[in-house]
Length: 56
Image (cartoon, rainbow, N blue to C red; front, side):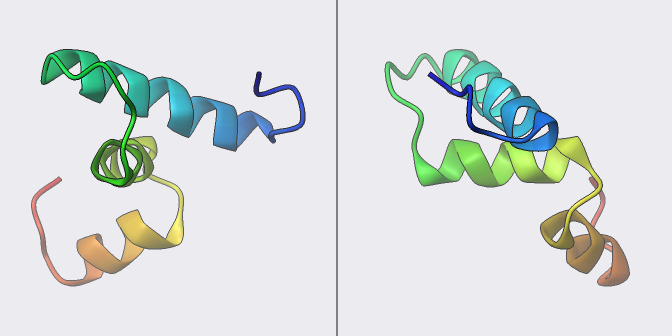
């Protein structure tokens, strides 16, 4: 399903899926993708939150 995604995007989606499972959700929503982006750690979302001293 994610063949055309970059390695980083696949990792984010894997992390998003884990977050959805952790919340017992049967779907991957934008909230899970945001958590995946933050947990992946190297993107803009994570950097902005780190610069704002948000504990990740």
